[in-house]
Structures are given as C-alpha cells and as structure tokens.
Length: 103
Image (cartoon, rainbow, N blue to C red; front, top):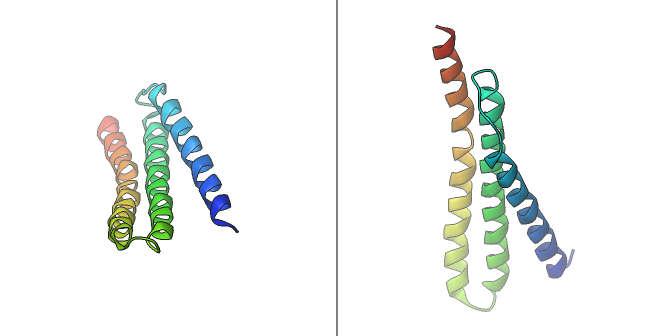
C-alpha cells in the first residue's frame, strides 16, 4: 500500500467517525435505551481513539524528514491509546445506572 493510499484511508475513516459523532448528537436518551446510548458513546470514543492513532502513524511517516515529528507522533499515539481505554468506561457506567433504576 502506498503512502497516499494510507492517507486516503485515514481521511475516509475520519469522515465516518465525524458522521458517527453527529448521529450521536441527535440520539435521545430514555431509561429503556440508556444502555444502547452508552454503547454508541463507547463506539464513538473508540473510533476517535483509532483516528488519533492513525494520525500518529501519519506523523510517523513525516518523522523521516524531521525528528520533531517523531516525538509528537509518539505523544499523539499514546494519547490515542488512552482514548481507546476511555471507551471502556461508558459500558460500566450504563450497567451501574441500570442497576440504580431497577432498585
């Protein structure tokens, strides 16, 4: 795969991630659908994390030309992994909220 193809795939993934976030803004939340809502939030957060990791890899390509990009790419990569771990929190939060509404 060429570098241009990688950039094109990254841009396409970012576009789909943005569409997912816009769709999430117009989702209504009721006590019955709260688990689905938090599942959608977790999916959107995970997609943002993967988008950040893709951006870090793109910066890694530019690190061949300038070593500053290597450091920035590493920081962005670690940030993307942290965002992916944050996507685990909404699922447990939804389960806690459902337990509270049952009581």
